[in-house]
Image 1 (tube, rainbow, N blue to C red):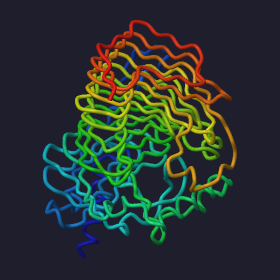
Image 2: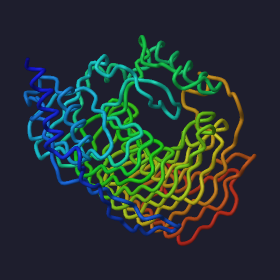
Image 3: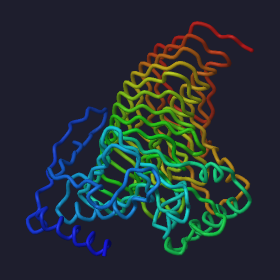
Length: 460
């Protein structure tokens, strides 16, 4: 009887919300300055109607699973033409949240979404990707597939329970065998629906946020506290804004935001504190990316703060679909990174990297200000064979007005003799202390230096 009454309430909510005469979704446009032609970014203005998850049976006791209640609120909001699904203040336990078009999940001040770490809750498997290879895996904690106008907003917090995922951070033999299996399937064009990876002890962790093949994405103002895998992954998306976020995730593979095979994005006024790279632009891996043939392009990152991370701006290493027209400016590294600007690829990737700009950056300590490495294979070097050689074209890297306290080296360019790096410009670089070497250059053409200053070199 209770379930019957709840379903009646859901249907009544749809009727009362005007399901037959939907309010319209509208947009405002944001003009973004960049050193390349940049389309205006469209920001969705959702209909002014709210759907509180409490009205659909959610309980804020930190113990009751609210997965079904949240799903009902999202369905009602979607059927009513869109609006905000409200998560009020309190601690709400849930499993995966699956979005539908025109839905803004709004986290009120004091709201905490606490995601279960029970892997069974994230089944059945959904279409996603693992480090640039498409597959069916455990559902991301927040997942949207082929949606238009989707958002997470508000000042609340996403805070997954991490106990199981921390165990899965390890790479036992079963996990490594699963990676080999997926790599082989992707390299030999096995259909994606046959790449079922959420089985046995594969332990392939889900993303926190994974929006796949979506249009007009908005992520605004909320906090993230830890993540099972890549934290924010925007994959094959067209148009979006990531702003005012406070991201802290120090587990394994905890990149801050990964933009992959996506275009027309603005990332601004965010703070990242990561166990891996902070801002990463990717474009798929090898055969899968060549099949999809979708570059990442027209991306601006501005006014962000990075407390810690491996890289401030990373390109790759999954970049086989190509990366072009990226502009990061007016950002600050408050503690340390390994590299300020890192382009990483290998002889299996192909694709291209071109027209990448970094300007007006202040930072404390790092190993390299700029590094390009064309032989980054990590564990894959000996784990799987090379199915096809394909060399990445790298052309047009620009850095201007970079202020650093301490670095081991200013730039380290390790190109491939088959396609040397071309057109690298470094201007107005000031470093208080260089501790190992100023520059190392291999297979690179057309380097321009202008006004590079460092006060001393201490050789250890």
